Amino acid sequence: MRRFSQEWFDALSRCRFAAQWPDWSGPRAAPVMPWITAPIHPYLRQAFDHMGEVLELNPGDWLYPHVQVRSYMLVEAGLTGRIVATADGQSGAGAMALSTPMRNAAGNLNWLTHRSAIGRYQALSHVRLREIPHSEALAFLMQADKDFYLALYAQMELINLSDRFGFAILALLPAIDRFKALLTAWSLFYGEVSEGPRGLRIRVPIPGRKNHIAQVIRTSSVTLDGILRELKTAENWEREGDFVTFNASTLQSVHEWMRHAEGKDAYLARPARVEDMLLAAQAEAAEIIH
Image (tube, rainbow, N blue to C red; front, side):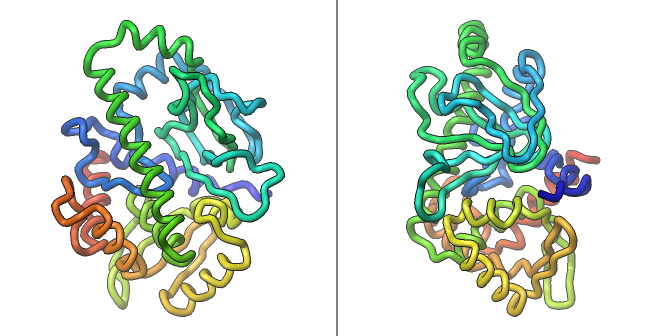
């Protein structure tokens, strides 16, 4: 498999929404998205920096040689997949969420109960991780202060809400809208918005190889090829290396579905226009950089 470009790795390492949160609800300009969560809270990242052992894996490597998960893992570079159940011996498309730098790769589901997480965790690119055994994490937590507890609990909620959104989209939306939902999530965290001849355009690093994308949105490669052909015709979809550019308006219909799903009185409601959400995300990143 061809290695992703350095530009792709650099794009995934951007620090959007990685700053201190204004409160325990998380970053204000980052609504809950399917299949990818907001970066973990700085308090939690500090624990990984202090305690985590560095691991480097190649594409296709399993994060654990066994099914049982016995540690927390944080992504420092690259892309990993959180696969529902096992990928072996199953018919049809699987289901997978994504973890990018500064996100939890594994370990949040069973660190107290130690029960099976009925899943596997795989490197989708070359990755660098930090790992903390569950036993060490528990010992650290017993001495942590209140803010660390709150940050951990809030992060667990954000992960659970993202997973719930993802499963709802898989259950309720057709394949093309599932793909647009993935693009919406990816654009929030990694999209660069600019003015085009027919409105705003979004440039994003590709969210994995084609087989990865098909697994996230639970569809066949044949169906995904048809979706891509339709987008190229209708939305001026342009591929350049490990990046794609397309019209922001492509995402409006699924953005409205997400907004409706959360309800009109939702706390931190999404703006009516997807362009406004993406511009706010881009502005948040610019404030951190400068």
